[in-house]
Image 1 (tube, rainbow, N blue to C red):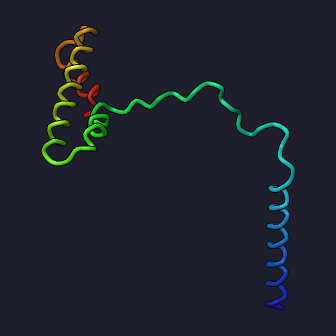
Image 2 (image 1 turned 180 degrees about the vertical axis):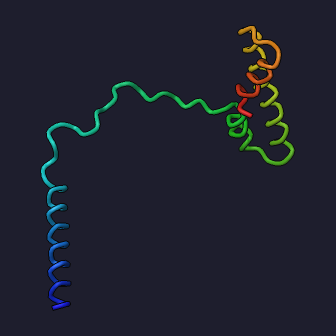
Image 3 (image 1 turned 120 degrees about the vertical axis):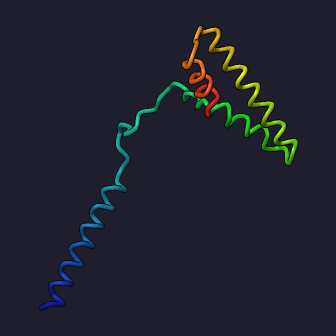
Length: 103
């Protein structure tokens, strides 16, 4: 009796699995499930720190350190110029530059 009940349960679950598999591999739906977006993907804007790391990746040793420092200094200067153009002053300028650089 114990084996009969186990065999019935196993057979039933195999049958359900086959039925589910048969439905999933049936004819493709006439309408797409996911609609295509005709617009190009928005570019991800990595932080300036990440960009500096990527540019200094090819160098090694002191040259890499120097490239990283120069790139970060240029990034801070660019962010500072942007803050000045937007007339940001005081502690907000410091926060703006830090978030702009990506620290």
